Image 1 (cartoon, rainbow, N blue to C red):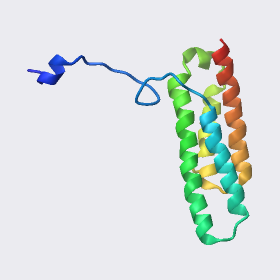
Image 2: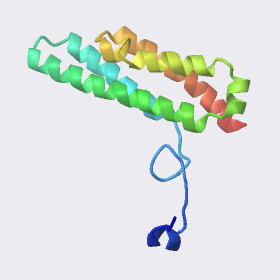
Image 3: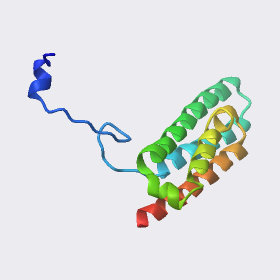
Image 4: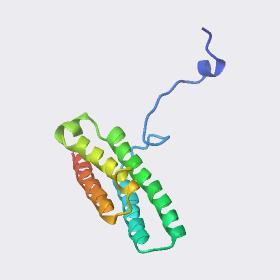
Length: 136
């Protein structure tokens, strides 16, 4: 089989990262900021009777909840490595519980600020482990 000219002339490089450039920058604060937004939106939703406002709040809350999940998945799949999971066997469960709390059965599907508080607490547990791994 004859390869196209551009593949013969240009080197073939494979890279993987949480973004399009392997920057190596990871921080659970990204997930926490979005989760704080979810909680604030839930509080504003509960305090407002205007149907248009409440609809917009739910849409934005769902978007922010998805961002929480994405940031947690990046940590789980790209940052944390087998030695981290060996040292912190609860890590898989924590990330799973946090992503579920950000998902349809959690903050994405609820306008209850208490659910968002639970999500923030899980993110804080993950952050504690994250920063311990950064010290090692």
